[in-house]
Image 1 (cartoon, rainbow, N blue to C red):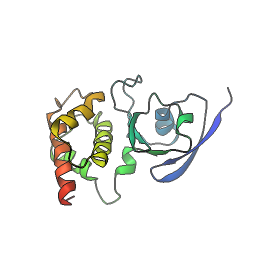
Image 2: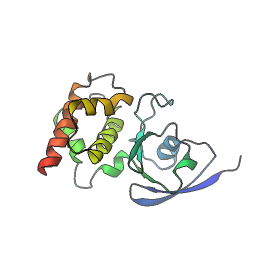
Image 3: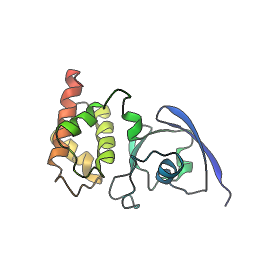
Image 4: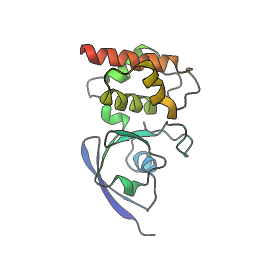
Length: 160
């Protein structure tokens, strides 16, 4: 099959890539564009380590053919990280030890970012439900849920 050119917005900037049909967004992000915060985990959409936002919605990039993002907005962890520091979600994960090995952390932070954009004050049950598609083998989830609650609190008070 002939390669295709796909144009989309990546972290607020225009992007254009040449890829073979059905190449995953994850592969393009990591291997062609160098956005390595998008992790390679199960490659089956079950672990969440490759989660990115597409038009603001969390999606497993390991299942998403690059053609499906044509004309859409894709945001990676690099895209939510301010030049001068960390986003409120990232800061809360750091402050609350919401990571251990860090492998699942980018996907967790992308999910948390999407959740807090939809609902700036989610309840604990809503946070747990939102994290349902992401697997962490190190922390036991408690610090992750606590970090998202802290980020929601910081956002509501305007802290950073």
